[in-house]
Every structure is written in C-alpha cells, then in structure tokens.
Image (cartoon, rainbow, N blue to C red):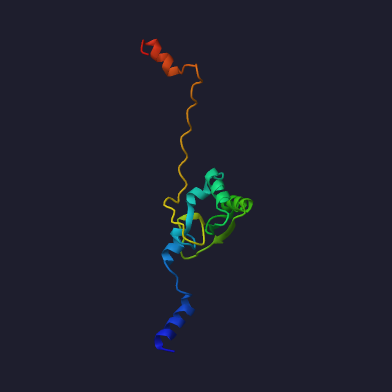
Length: 149
C-alpha cells in the first residue's frame, strides 16, 4: 500500500467516507438540490395546518422520500409525518448538531429530477365572485347611474 492510500484510508476512518457536495447535502437535509421536488423553510413548517399543495405533491410522488429537520420541535413535524404515512411516502428525521439547515422539510427522489422551482407557490388571492349572468355588478350599476355605459 502506498503512503497516499494509507493516508486516504485513515482520513476516511476519522472523518467518514468522502461525499460529493457536502455543503449542499447539509443544506438539503442529506440530499442534493437536483433531486428535490419541494423544500419548505423552517418558518413554513411551523405554520399551522398543512399546505394543500404539499398533500398533493406527497400523493403524486410516492416514490420520493421526505426528509424532516430534526432540529425542529416534534410537535411541528408530526402533521407532516402523518401526511407522509397517509400518502405512503417514506420519511426520515435528519438531525445535524453542527449545522442547522434553513429548510425544515425536503421531499426528494434518489435520483436527479432537476426541477427548477422547488418552493411551494404562494397562495393565490381569492377570486371575487363574478356576477351571475343577467345580474349587474355594483360597478356597472354605478356607471349607469352616472350616465356611462
């Protein structure tokens, strides 16, 4: 065995096996960015209720794996664990004592999917109910009151 191989063997014994993109793996709770379907920040995870979009993504991506940040209170994670169980998605609670990721939840595959936008889209504004056919809206009534059609 050459000195380089011995040194490499000792380094792996001390620090663990070499990893590709270790900073990215810490950020995305043990997986790579190219594998991520959706990632939620810690503040998004702490919100009350479960995002309907996440339920849909869990049911559509049953082969994916859900990674949960172990530095977050279990009470906040329990709703996601339950949703993953209901959808049949495997999950893992990842705790890293040296690094607290900004992400609280990551849904990812074991292979690259290269999804461009991995955030949940913001809730769209509720639409105003449209006037029924034949029924005039308040604005159209005001317009006719002032003589404009």
